[in-house]
Image 1: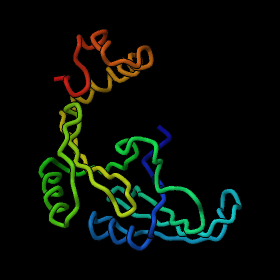
Image 2: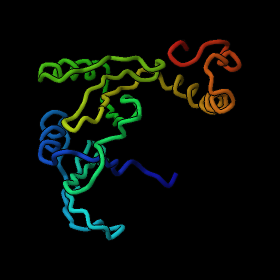
Image 3: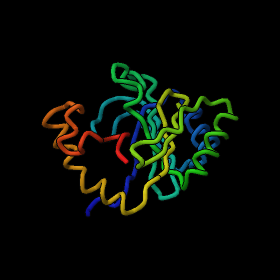
Image 4: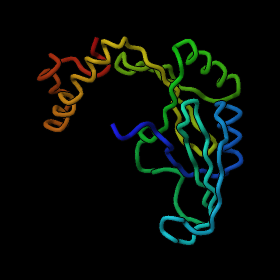
Length: 181
């Protein structure tokens, strides 16, 4: 596989300093790089900005742009709020539950834990710019991951064919998603 890992995913932020403080102080990421420009290097457009990078244990980053002179929202306001989010992997269910308690102790509203298909367990909250964040951990055994991998195209084919989960018995005998055991 040519792709080795995620380098970064980039979002817009309201305030670079508050964003750095949140991701460093609350989530424990490393503030690893910042660069500022008056013009966008790839397009040449005038757009004064700072681009900040916050690094995770594996070296991948979440990055942000503060764009004080540009129009636009932090995120797509017409899309359902739950769709656009960034998910961070934690080591275990115990760590996930401890983080929920710690975040709530900091006054952060946390949703969950939510069981997703007996695949992952997740909690959700928002950063200072209103971006939805997820902390998640794997909850299935390796042999179960192989089952999920083997059926992934079947699930996609069903969706492509019907766009209607009421037809799921075609593949799963009436059970799919959160109902699957």
